[in-house]
Image (cartoon, rainbow, N blue to C red; front, side):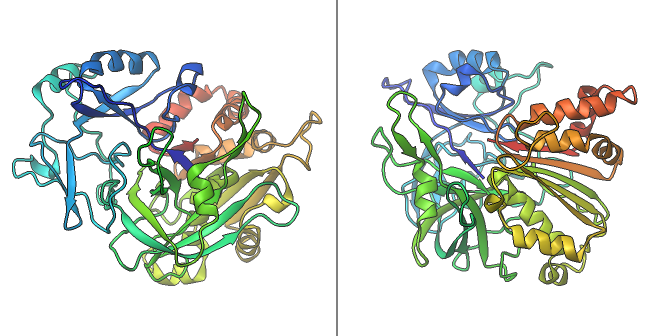
Length: 448
């Protein structure tokens, strides 16, 4: 799964050339945000580079779009020294997620490390005084850093940053779409043995494609959900895997076919070729540690990536042997939306798990161009959710159940509509109940 990093242009004046990085959550998708150069990723943070002389204007615009600024940090990164990037500002804040606006053309397997002797405890330093005054939440509290979710403080983040990425090598690049399917989707495996990039299921890594963008600047990173467990496909702690679809669309004005820069780069990489990797990032999509939890997975297309990692951790023999402390005994249900049967990514793996663990895993497919919904239209994932809404609702009410949604933006609306109907049968308002689920960290969404 992919989400492009975000950058805004700098000003030309001396004062305006001071750049600050805004970490923003909660931006609503709208016609206005569609015109921005930072696609909205609902579950995570959007990072926006803002010149000093546009800070107030940008704050007002973010508020208008429904966003919340969770941190502001000055962008003053220097060139990496011996594989590590030093930050020259004594008041810089170390962000939890990837600072995708940083320069991304430095080679080497170095970690971007703040060298600040005056940073406060836990690695965070206070922002400048003017930022503290401007950056207040609704209660008047200063917001300098998004707090890590409870019980996730030891999750690795930003081992490698855009200004000092890890240089990995392609081990394999295999097609996932069978003959007769639509588009190109590849399963890529990268060698991590030369570095110390560690991650867990549900996180993402950044990929920096080579070359320059349309403005003549180095390409910015794109985020992709990891498709392998923390031990990798070979269960040796030396690899990471991605599920990547080549982005292809028609230009709205010229009608010309346009291909995604990074996705095309990845889909045609050959074994032995190098790739720039950053991260890992993300804590929204992490699995519960309880081996008796129930896991509902709603995915479309390459949104299957984190779901595959979950299922491997739960059911694969080699994984279970490698994780004696985690032996899954709960119930997992995957509802997977694709256009055609040949587009059922990892079909054989999923069917093998279903056959071996029929009481613990259920697979339901929504094949839009081959199946019909009750109204005679195409069968989409929201139609499958509606079909099983009562059963899903009963499962969701179980306090051990976590729901994960990953795939194309907009799929949540149909899912919410179906569950609204099911909850209403018991006099429950779904929107209110869903807020409780989110507060309890049992409702996880990553759409793009």
